[in-house]
Image (cartoon, rainbow, N blue to C red; front, side):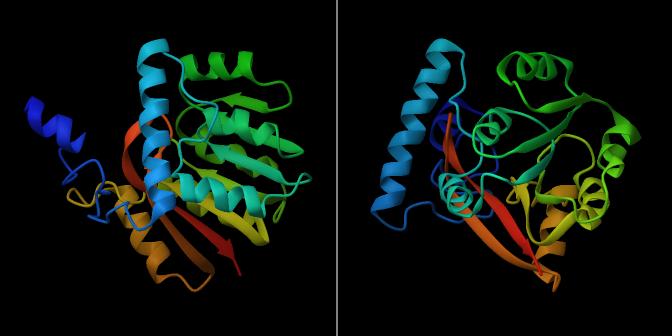
Amino acid sequence: MNPIKKLIAGSPYRITRAHTEKGTVAFRGPEDCFDCLRSLGTFCVRIATGEPPNLPWLTYPAIRFLQAKLKSDARIFEFGGGMSTVWLERRCSEIHTVEDNSVWFERLSMKTRRTKLTLADGEAYINAIDRFEDGFFDMIVVDGSIDRMACFQRAERHLKPGGLMVIDDTDKEQVARGQIACLDELMSATRAYRVHRFSGWVPGSFWAKETTIATKL
């Protein structure tokens, strides 16, 4: 990727940094302009200090949606930990996170207090949620690097009716037709969820993407 293209687009799959990989533009009103400035500011701080912002790496519209929907007694499961884990711990009563990256696992172990962290790989990672009963969780986040389709399928029965299924980066792999794109297509066709698409700017990374949040019916 040549330097000019990288400066303008941020990745080979975007038209510009203001576009998701689906081609959706993240400028629809004043709030998006403010989000763009916040994204740039947190990106510059991350580059300068090496520390990511204390916000989920979801789009800002998705973060606002979760702020409005999540209750303090919510029980959360995450496939893939990150700054979202730190953010959720401050807002919810019970967090369970499975992580396959040992470096991130150690960082999260130092940054969190109440989160139940599990380091696992392969089938153990996918099956980590099975130690909980059906309908146990108010929200499940599918945002890890291991087989997101399998994680989603394994997670479904553990999400209560009215619960939230969060799938990040649903604009990715559109050209390669990878697992994320297949999961995105599944969510577009489903009748089991009310699906909300949140395209927008991202904390700590100066570009736009899409986060999908689906309410289980």
